[in-house]
Image 1 (cartoon, rainbow, N blue to C red):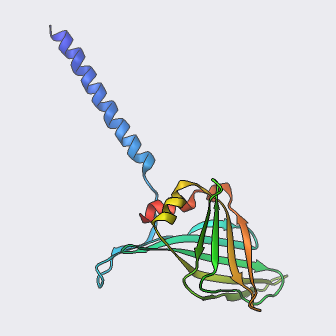
Image 2: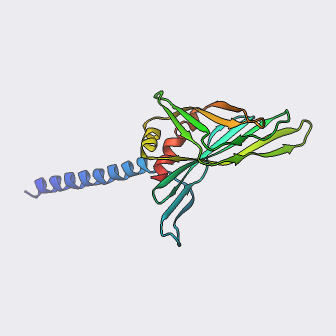
Image 3: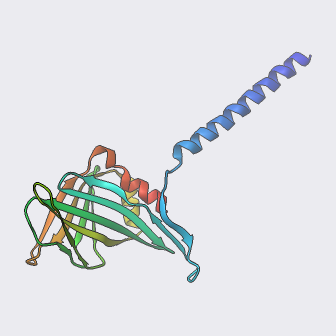
Length: 194
């Protein structure tokens, strides 16, 4: 008589343990590895202020770029840092307010953002056997809304087109294909800032 109850009790315990194990594995698989340079309530404004640490989105010998998001209350800004290098001397680039940053996603959707600030590039030279000239464009900001965030979450990144101004005032752009290891950086950053 007790045999039937013991078997049912063992099945109940086994089912419960499996359910707990499943829940733990599910939570772990959806967890984000978010890294923040700032994640606090501003003591003066009492608003939540978050900023993710920069994540590399592209990189080669002559060009490199990182992305990060900043959120103050409900305002979300994408911040792009960019560097270009050359063996030939060149004048630093600038970014004008309204300059485009275009993302081509793997689902062939294009997302266009416009910069909200003016940036002057910082020039540096590394002297060696052959001098290397570099220009750094730091903290180029693009305001984003919920629709754009949803678009970033819907697909991985394929290519970036980045517009900048040459010293003579002419606008040009660089296309940078995103390597496989960086394709999911954008959706992951969006999840961290939400």
